[in-house]
Image (cartoon, rainbow, N blue to C red; front, side, top):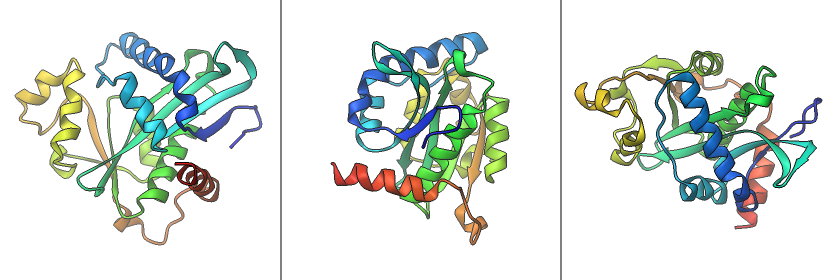
Length: 211
C-alpha cells in the first residue's frame, strides 16, 4: 500500500532479504539510544520471516540508495503454541522517518496480517515502549500478566538475547521490564479489525501463490 507521502508498506518476500542487515543494525542502534534491552535476531531468522510472508516492510521509493528504495521501517509476526498465539515483533522506524506516524502504519499492517492469516489466534506483544503500548491499546490489546501469554518454550528462549533476561529468570518468567499485552479475538467478535484487510489478503495470496 502506498500512502499520500509516497511511503509504501508491503508484506515482504525473499527478494527483500537485502534489507535485513540494515534492519538489524537500526534495531540495535535504537535499543542503545533508549537504553533498553532487545531480543537479538539473526540475519537468517529475519530473512526466513520474509520468505514465509510474515514480515512487513516500509520503503521510500522517492529516495534511492544502493539497496534500491530507501529503508523506512519494519516489523514481523510469528506463531507460537501450535498457532494459538501470534506475536508482532521487531517494530522499528529509521531515525530519518520518525515523527511521521509510520510506526502506526506498520503496526496496523502487522496486526491485520496476523488477523488475516490466523483469525482465531490471540495476538500478543512484549514491549517497554510507551508508543507501542499506545498503538496496542488503540487496536484492542490489554495489559496482562505473562502467564496469559504463550507457554511455548521457543518463544521465551528468544528473550535470552536481551540484557534484561536475568530479570525474567529471577522473576520466574512471571514479569519483566517489558509489559505483556494481549488481543483476544473472542472478545472482539463482529468488530472490523483494519481498513487494510483486503489489501493484506491480496498480498498474502500473491506471496503464497509464489511459494
